[in-house]
Each structure stands twice: as C-alpha cells, then as structure tokens.
Amino acid sequence: MVDKAVLRRRIERLDAPADIKVLLEKLLEATLVVGDKIIQVGSKILEVVFDFAKAYPSIALGVAAALVMSFLVHSIPGLGPILSPFLTPILLILGIGLGALNEMMDVSMKVKMAGVEAQFRSFGMR
Image (cartoon, rainbow, N blue to C red; front, side, top):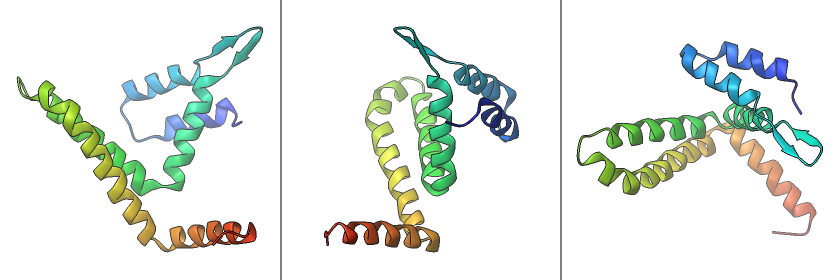
C-alpha cells in the first residue's frame, strides 16, 4: 500500500484544476468501516488509478478523451440525454481500443507482452 503522503504529492503535481485536486483529496480520505476495522478505500482506488495511468498512458488518455466526448454529447440540449446512454459505451470502447493498439505498437509494451508470454510458456501453455 502506498503512503498517503506519496499520493498527496502525486495529486499536487497533477496538471488539473484546483477543484479536481480537492475532489481527489476527499477521495483519498474515503474510508470504509467493516466490523472493527477501517479500510482505506480511497487511497487504494487512487493508487490503482495512478499506477494504471503510469503503466498504460495511451489507454488512460483514450478513456479520458472518451469521457470528455461523452460529456459533450450529453450536454447537447434535447438530443444529448437520449444519445448519451448509447454513445458513451461506444466511445469508451473506441478510446480503450485505440489506446490499447497504440500501447501494443509501443516497443516497451512488446517487451512486457513477451514477458507475459514467457510466463505462460513456463506453465506449459502455448
């Protein structure tokens, strides 16, 4: 588990509006009480999101672009709320797909996939 101070520094370094940073700080403090234990849900969510964005920047950019386009479609008066439930999944699929294709074309991704392939071969899978 990453320390909250590290996540706070990542949030501070983001090139995002102050409102977004405040919301991320609130998410960082989100907890869940299960029985007599307190689970730091927010920090775990942010840790996974930051790690994913670092490992797969093209996919993260594709998702962000798809969500922005989905918001713009939804904001069209009258027609937006009707089209948005259909176009949002399509835009996300396109964003993730194009991002994944870009990641696969990247040399470092080929190296990662070769490592995964080698692991499967060691298990006797082809």
